[in-house]
Image (cartoon, rainbow, N blue to C red; front, side, top):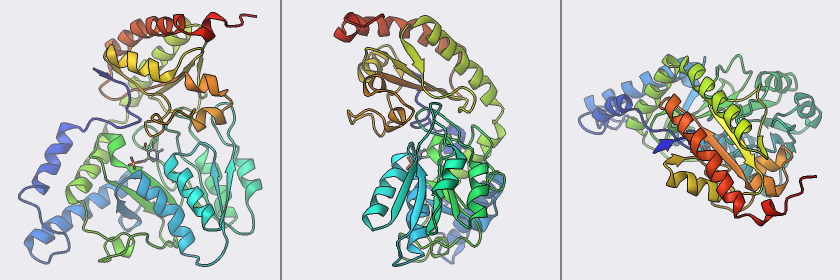
Length: 387
Ligand SMILES: Cc1ncc(COP(=O)(O)O)c(C=O)c1O
């Protein structure tokens, strides 16, 4: 199989598993224990915290370990509002956020707060001026993702962060897709909170963190023994945290590989747009993650395409992994102006460190054939208006 779904998850690097292994076996201690086993686990966690903080320009106490991107997003949005009990507050977010943010916003609305969803342009980017105009007296938080998981569009976070700061509003960004692919530095980005997930950067699943700038007022969502400075109780996922920090270290070390990945991705985009008629690239070219390609092929269904590609040994996706089981068109593709029919014919291919030139060539051979076969069966294609 050729795996081209790195935005959904990544294969764990064997060297990361090796670093984790002792923490399942001989170094199994509970980091809260006072004996040697506990101290060893505590030291490992604090070293990991330091490594992760260093990678994003933060200080170690500003890193709160969580179960991943979803929890970090929930913690940021709900935690900030919980720190202001009883009042009706306002949050600004974008129309193309991951469900971890959008569904949290729906919940927040049910609690009586207000949410503004700023639109994006055809390239999938917000306009910082529109974000500023949306700020009200009771705006507490702006949450805009750093890079989109479906179309790879990169947002002007530093600019929005500066606007937020000048109005005394907290700024959160979901950097789950951007870490390891483009520079992520919390000071350069002007953010108070930033979500990261380990499994998108070749680390283990079920672990991540929220960067929480010193002084940011936030209340916990999970109560218990007071772990993570009382912000996230529960015995730490020691082996996961060790694997996560090694993944961050390796991502920094291998950052230059993004140039090779981007070259392959551009080759793929050029070939697909050249060889397959009635095709569009979703999302702009300039502000785009180096590994993301997202196409719409008119007159066919993304689901059929993904299944046929899979039968030929290629793993891709339509929409995001989370929404691909719903048969509704992707909210991201609708937000960039696609009509629902074209939004249904989307294919996301996301490359990774294991993607080779031969893989891309194979896709370029197989994809035009499959699209053509599906179109031959499509009444929409047969009666298309060539006008
Ligand atoms: C942008 C974005 N945010 C959040 C998440 C959720 O992260 P996790 O799977 O670690 O909960 C994902 C995963 O698909 C994502 O792409």
